[in-house]
Image 1 (cartoon, rainbow, N blue to C red):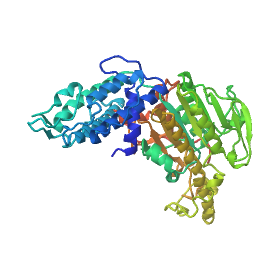
Image 2 (image 1 turned 180 degrees about the vertical axis):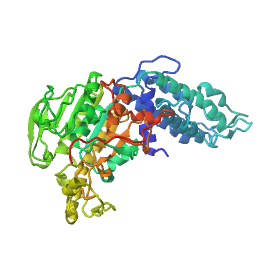
Image 3 (image 1 turned 90 degrees about the vertical axis):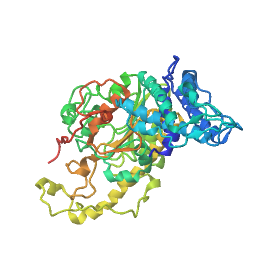
Image 4 (image 1 turned 120 degrees about the horizontal axis):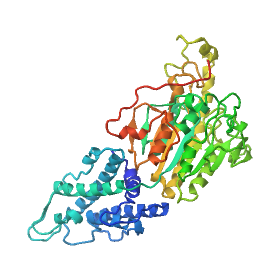
Length: 558
């Protein structure tokens, strides 16, 4: 079932962006700017909505937004094919309006599904073949006296329109519409797409169950995109995992094997080897003409090289402290270290959210790559003052593995593990972690709302994930750095209706190192090295064989 919100807005936006370069029958300039795309979206939406409304109630007050020159031919072609904008007519067949509305809606669903199939390399129609369903809504027989008229269709379907003695069936209309709509799809996909924006959201130490505390993430990114329910990190520790997200490589390649970040001059700091920041997502996207920004956490140990800014970043507002980044912390803001205090307005998630909102609002004509990396829910897991106690009284997490002490474990694990009698004291820390994510959920809603207001939401690849998981007392463990599932399992959802399905759940094994190749392939941005991960877009290609296992790499600990 297609979500109503997506059909009424996001799917129309998808269709407009994909068709912005199409001109069936005549050549036309591409709608390359965000302003043109937004105007096109409105014109396309109005065309479909007004067409259905006039057919249903003969409402002549509905007005269509003027399409930009780059989109006029596409709007006209689709409008003519589906019957134009019907006006009040005393001879309109009683069921003609119902048929016209059904044709608009079915064609819209078909185009969206078919564009998704083709962009994923599927030449044969699968789901889209069943999308163009009219049921019996267009099985009309007109009386010989000519007192009524059929619905109006144009282009190659003009012959289906008539008056006395004519008969229209749902099957005949479907057979006529499908090849014409397929031509529109072919034209759209033969031309270069508009470059998408990228919003990469990475939390810190997020337990997989805490995603349930984030309704905005679940209802927008997961419900309107693809929710990967078996997502994992190959490195359950902060800096190595974050390096993997930025590069698509494991720590044996990035050489970031511990929670220290070295200098960029090839030297060694705190015993860690150097990450080549000249070949990361930021460097690739900026080289391809994108504006780039990182707001929040970079890699652990970054304070040792402050105020240097790694390659590839245009807007750099990054924590330079490592212990507590909720209040009383420093941000390196484009080379200047700025101190924030303890006032409610200094709460770090809110501060970097404001920076993100300003960044996405700048220069809408140029695409952006933004990594939004709040410190939450990392300890000390301080919630925003408005959220303290917000989840008090919610059920405690007590799986069978919680506090388990009767299992054989290695000596180092028992030494560092939490005594069973003290595990209950950890409940307050778990509640704080969950409550600290409430401000992140609000931040996601604020940024996506701003993108929607700017007309950019559906041409933005939105990824939500975390660097790794954390344990809430399972197996007597309350941190990460172990191979237990709660430590390596991460939340992951991607919303990009132009090329990926909407409202789909996948259970394949996907990894943190799949993010970089996925973003590079979807945005058609050349990468600078070989990946260890794979593009998730491959999952929707015919005959793709996906991984059945993966390697966990951990170089620090017992």
